[in-house]
Image (cartoon, rainbow, N blue to C red):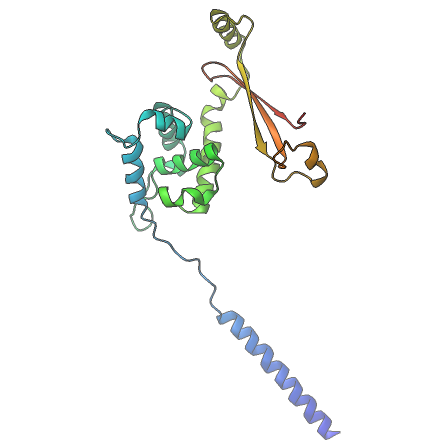
Length: 230
């Protein structure tokens, strides 16, 4: 009986010791830190400025228009409005006194992702900002555009707008026309498997048709999402 009690005491002590050691090890184990990458964001801004916004830019106006999907004056007006009204886009120093990413870098990152549908880290090597920062730029950019320009541009056309468009169409030889229609196919990444055959067109990839009716000056947009592909 005494031998049994001694054996139980030994087992109990071993269990207690192992438990305590595991707790201490878990408390003292250092949390893995995310690797810091010095991207030299200042160099990214200088490269971007010299490529598109300096007095003698590397790339001419028509290349800017193709890559940014708008002219330079419009882009700069958007950058100015965001930097004046949205704190995220203001050029401020960090805790060490070093200036953060410029408004041009942040807006260009957002525009590139919207224009090309590229991944967030695709702009890292050129603009010098990480994936999470690029996504934050995109979210703040879209929110800022809606906040600052929603009432003026993201609205239904007024009777005055429609009449102006009808007058323009008539002058161009198209009476009764308020805009031109175009469409494109977007790949439907998360299309249900049972629906895939209904939305595939030769490429074996399901797509959704986005149809847009736009005025000649691109001020008025009518967007239709067409799910059923004939």
